[in-house]
Image 1 (spheres, rainbow over the protein chains, first blue to last red):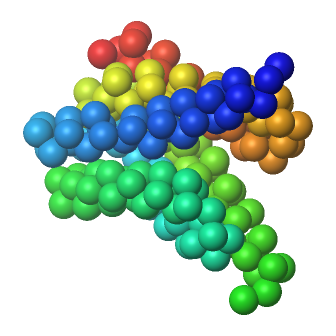
Image 2 (cartoon, rainbow over the protein chains, first blue to last red):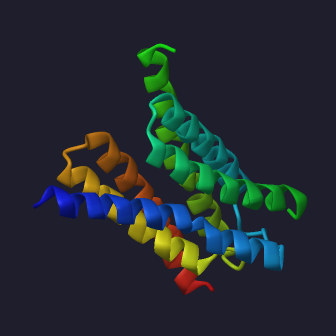
Length: 86
Length: 86
């Protein structure tokens, strides 16, 4: 399989997993319904995404920093709503 | 900063973001409460994680394959419950 095709799969993967938290953040902001959302998940996930963001900076890996920086914002919004409207 | 320390940050990041979906999967299985969970998020996220898994296999990157293979299982469980108990 060509390297070009493999790179496209990687970029598509990064796009999907990064942008996927946007509809969840929008839904949570609009409905304030967080009863089914796990506080443990968003605490661990936000912390992990922060570590990925730092890892990207420390290794000068711009795609890792940018993707995780964006995800971190979405995850923190959901986490704040979970804590506020549990 | 030493490379050793940076590697630990990366491993901790991978551990947190991978394992974070476990408490959400457990909560969803136990409560069947999926009203606050976004179908768009878990559809996009599961597809993205599948692409990361394939990307890891195609680039012979074992950590990427394993971490995303585990996350894919958790994400698919939550997605199936969301579709079944919406």
